Image (cartoon, rainbow, N blue to C red; front, side, top):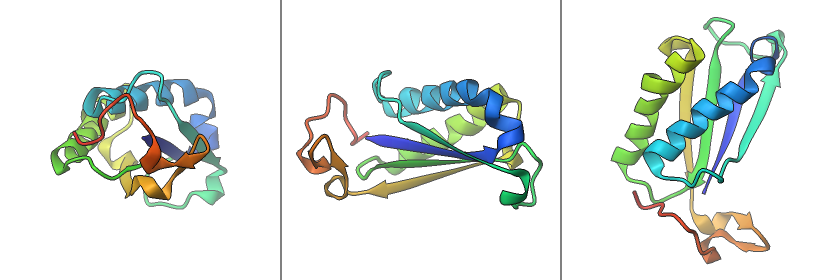
Length: 127
């Protein structure tokens, strides 16, 4: 399971949400093997004054919230995909992209009326 939160400036990213979502999803599907139909993305777009960082106006923060269980190599591969594929696709520099993977045990998630550790997934998280 993985949910993605995307933070950026509204005036820069509002009209580009589709291309951002597509690029991010390709990275997660390609490196972690999530099914194509498992896209859970939330855009938290902020006014210019509400995102303070020593970066350009294209600065983008991506948080991947996921079940624990992926190997260090899988996490590093996802981060590499963001810098090798996502940033160039979006036309931003590596300095303007930050990726944060936040892991939580499945039993800490409530999904479809039950605890996440009770789910029967069609894909592996122990990659």
